[in-house]
Image: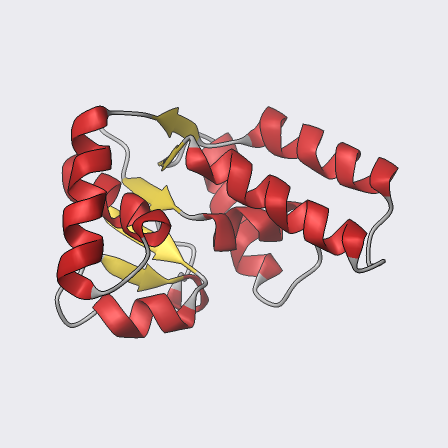
Length: 149
């Protein structure tokens, strides 16, 4: 049986390891992935982006170094399926130039287009900037826990 698949970005993944607004929905999404009700995928970039968030939190004194390491290890254990492709990388640049968004953000979008699935993000600014052109982009806050792709 084919499970629904979603691309998740770093704004969602960081909520798996840090207490932030939207954590309950992010955790529900992760639980559904762990229970094999759906598949979650992301570019390898997700690991670096979340690592950078942890670094910033330590730098601001919001998190200790040991806590950041534990969070990062948890992310590595529970990460979505990580993807890489030079063609999708090239597509992300094309999307970034066409829609005036960062290549980083557009890499997640490029993967959603490549995989023919939805991208779930908690980044409202990104969502609002591309939603009219890409109906596959969904806000985490709108995720209702039903595995629909």
